[in-house]
Length: 168
Image 1 (cartoon, helix red, strand yellow):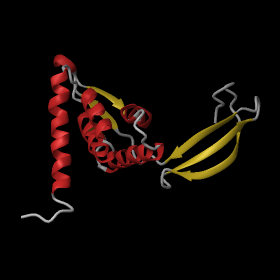
Image 2 (spheres, helix red, strand yellow):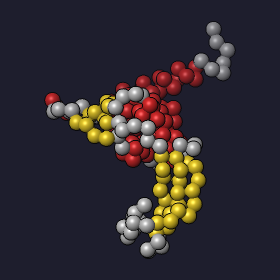
Image 3 (cartoon, rainbow, N blue to C red):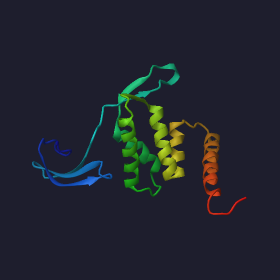
Image 4 (tube, helix red, strand yellow):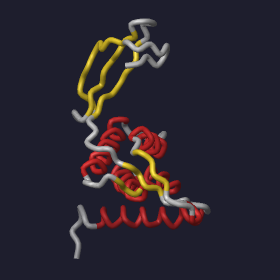
């Protein structure tokens, strides 16, 4: 493994342990040249998946390899300053990656991944869900936020109204 500090090719593994509910291995490494320590994660990749992105304004579709780090960054950005544990974010991203890789398709639409993220964030935190939706659905006016937030509120009220009280 190449050292991220000095680019030396050789490093020693100092510690290994399971991470992300056993779906990854966290390795603590030390560069044999400069002595710097860094962490790497090793994950199983079931298959190469290509993301198909819709072209904007009539442009042709673009294709790019699935990038877990990019997915993780966008989820983390939506969850920023919400008190959501990194472990929850890792579990959500790992779950989405697993669904994408086990779907049996070599290509998947970026819209499908966006829906998977929104479904996961809806379960974790409504504000993170709205943040992600605002970028994913390209909100352009305050009214867009108001309309979307009202659907989130209604869904939350529907969940709580059926529990805990004797009804008619």
